[in-house]
Structures are given as structure tokens and as C-alpha cells.
Length: 147
Ligand SMILES: Nc1ncnc2c1ncn2[C@@H]1O[C@H](COP(=O)(O)OP(=O)(O)OP(=O)(O)O)[C@@H](O)[C@H]1O
Ligand SMILES: [Mg+2]
Image (cartoon, rainbow, N blue to C red; front, side):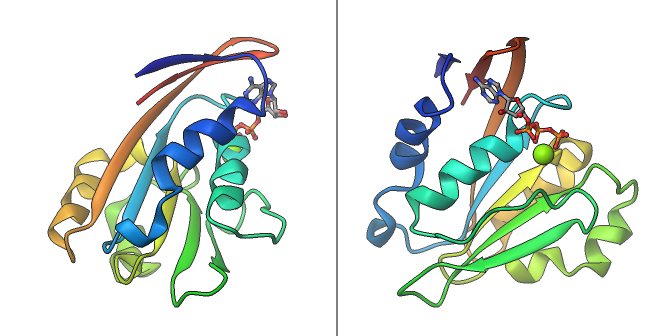
């Protein structure tokens, strides 16, 4: 799917399509976001949070790398990671990223393409599902999303 986003609210529909029917999903789900600075990765993550019922404010994890939010009425978490500042796979091991692939967790990873092979191996842990999404800056108010 290739979609032009002219309005931030348009992310809502996409997030709901991706994650709306939570009961049907019994496995961890990684949303791997690829796109330059300012392409809208954090903005899209906010709409994902809303789609799964997280009402806490989503703050960009750029400086602390990983934030987590309990998904209401569940035992699962929304994990939000930003790998921009990491350069080595052992750093991912150190933050225990593989341990997040459990329950019906939703794991959103900004800059996932820095570790594409490593991230793709998550499918081997608890049948984790991975959706790669490319985000592209077109102009100030316009982005392209490729799923
Ligand atoms: N159509 C659009 N889609 C997404 N963001 C938009 C759009 N139009 C304007 N913006 C703005 O662009 C900025 C995108 O920033 P955002 O923090 O989401 O990007 P990012 O990809 O997470 O960047 P970084 O790599 O620095 O983490 C926000 O200020 C947002 O309001
Ligand atoms: Mg961001």
C-alpha cells in the first residue's frame, strides 16, 4: 500500500487497520518504521497508541531509547523504541529488546532499518509478526507511507 498523508488525522485509519482488532492477534507485533528525520515516525506512533487504547502522552524516546506504556485492560504493553543513537547489535541485546517479543505486545521501532537483519529475526521469537513501514517527507505538510 502506498498512501499520501496530507493530514495527521489520516494516520488514524491506517493504525486502526493495522492494530484495531486486538482480540484477533495472539502474537507480539513489531511495527518497524523507516524514514528520515521528521518523516513522521513519532507522529504515527501516537496514532498507533490511540488505536490500541493507550491514553498516556507518547513522548519521543530519542534520548532514552525505550519507553513503555501498559495497554489498558490487558497484560500487554506498547513498547516505543528509537534506535537512532545506537550503532551496534550488542546494544540491542543490552536493552533486552528480544524479551519484548511476548504476549500481545506492540513494539514500535523508529530507525528499525539500522538493524534490519536483527529485527527480521524477531519473527523467530514467539511467532512475532513484523510490519515494515516506510515514511517519506514530501513537503512540509505531506508525507508518503509505504506498507
Ligand atoms: N502529514 C504529516 N505527517 C506526519 N508529520 C507531519 C505531517 N505534516 C507535518 N508533520 C509534522 O512533522 C513533524 C514530524 O516529526 P516526527 O517527530 O513525527 O518525525 P520522526 O520521523 O519521528 O523524526 P525523528 O527521526 O527525529 O524521530 C511533526 O512536527 C509533525 O507535526
Ligand atoms: Mg521520532
